[in-house]
Image: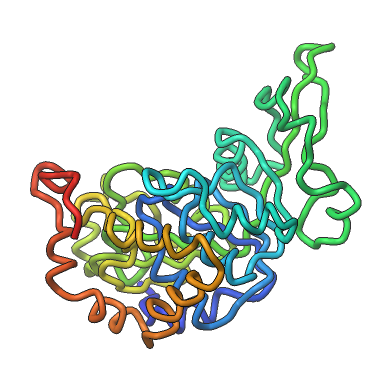
Length: 320
């Protein structure tokens, strides 16, 4: 079996490029690949065409640092902390972010269609709503951005029910997917505990998938119970052992949300000056994820550990 283990620095340098069509796993404040986001920020890749499922501070930070060329999304918020992520909102209000809005179910099904290799996705979703009446990116602007289709959607006739109109949605062509999982082996086999969100879909769909994991198991150990495998080895390009790689978001079965950290980011992201200062301290001011964990401190991280049998803190209101 091949060994795909590499440092997070090397994985991001090798598989994340300027202009990539890219997607992250997780869901707002759940199992987001935050360590990889911080490393992208440090390394400087930019001009991403983003296919974001429900996003949070992961894409908010990259948007705030002007790394995103076009953003296709359903919503962006740190659930329970910000109703709308603030750097994202500021860019929208200033007209500085090229942005397209689909419904959440449409985005999730588009990513699933990508995993199936479908040429387009026919749905009834969004019909009768502003999501079809209003386009965030005009047809003219779409022609100028490689990787985007000329149309947000196209009405087509259902061939099995003549006269019925359905919405044909484009299917993402992902260059890169980045996901965080609980367990992975050197060959890239992954175990995901709890909700998978769209992690499996983007891992299958993308040309290259980077996995960060809480635990690195041997290939032999992970194969003892193949019913737990959620992502097969052939979908994965790189495996990075990064404990607390989802912090400050939650990683089911391992640690809970760091609400104090999320609130601090939410407050700092209100202004560009405070946002820059926050990233200087927590991203650019540390060399790597080892330095990040050291800065957080062992007591803070231990206080986030879940209660066995519960999956979260015994007291879910607890702040580190």
